Image (cartoon, rainbow, N blue to C red; front, top):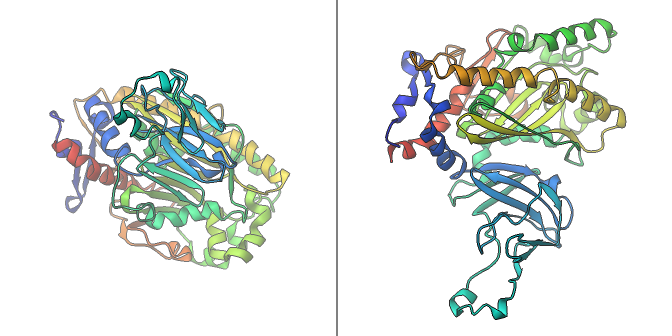
Length: 448
């Protein structure tokens, strides 16, 4: 690396009540290059949903760090992941984001590959005067060293390693269960993927999803709309968990929500939302309670913003959004987002889910533009290095407790740390969890 040591970028002294991050981690090109190697190209990364390649020969394309990736189901139904690069000259083979193909033909020299990644033909092979050594090579697409599927969430890694996907997800897998179990038939992505970029560092998106502190400052127009709608609704529409669960009524007095931090950088911030018709899942509340138990059902109705480090985020409140973060440069990030939904919900619930998704999550909605403008404002402000250390990661340090709490116990959740909070604490210690995982992965790169 040369210019930075780890202590120059993360000032982590919990015994002294200090946790600070240097602005350079958002702007420095060498730091960004090291992140690509250490964070995105050495560990598990979210690729997409199994439902994106549901049928024989279905495929989708994505990236891991700088590497293009092809995920495809073959004719026998087996799902695999490959480097989307022809072994001949390296050109990308699959050119579109999603489709169905029994055969992929490289657009450069017409080498072809079937849906299992096997090379099927080399153009003019017999006339090529190839050596026996060439003939002995495997000419198929290179499979990812690691590829895993958890409840329809697909992950891959460019590097071999001893940490299994199950171990990497750990206790945070129980929060993916809260999404996957909303329907016995599983999940689907609602048609209408959105891709956009913002001119700021990827870690600002990572932080913002877990940042309750900004909400009333950055989204006043959305809050105003919600207040107006609530005034227009009848009393039964704003009924909440207080009327539906004795547990929350008795235990949650003074607690509006909190956060959980897990091993390997995964985090959840959550708030008590209530079992209310304002949430599309409401029509299934009774059935979910019967099938899964009241504890798990109640957690499905809580506001939950989950991050699986480093690039997957699932935000669930009035609607549900899946976000995939792709760093492009120190000051440029691509976001791919979908509305995610349980299969089999009624037409009315799906309509409500989509309308509320458009309200808040769309780039044309009332929240996402506020957030991306804030990211770009931060990126511009990071140039002010007279004071290099940021002070945005300290809220909640005296409230943090090891292990879980009585609310997480309802779903047998065992995090590394937790914070319980009123509506104004807006814990930032879960952001520290990101950066401790970041530091652990970056340390060898920074020392090299």
